[in-house]
Length: 125
Image (cartoon, rainbow, N blue to C red; front, top):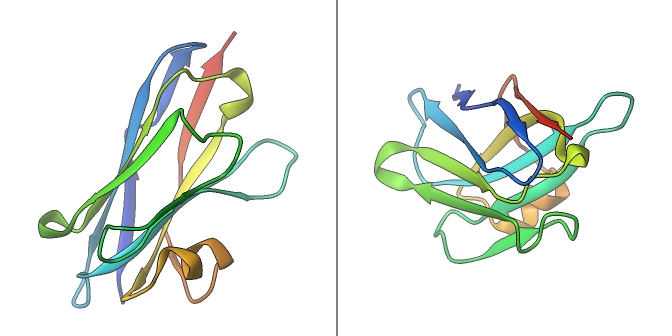
């Protein structure tokens, strides 16, 4: 069973940048497709970004396109989300998700994912 642990959340002012990461550990922690999802207070969890296990294909939600970048380090079984030009509307708990040998599309669809416990990102105005 893979374990996913997010880190790097915190408080940042609007217009600022923040990077969050998620590391996978466990006996099958390799060759993962990854995704980031977020849940704002009072709202449903929504897709943010995904990257396939080869690291070639990426998808982004329209609301973050051009501001956020997802990347992965296979050697470290870690995925990163670089968030720039942050807005108060980006305030949420950010969850990483992973699927071994998955594609970015399957991550977007939420199929067969393992989930982390989340890290809080707060953007002040």
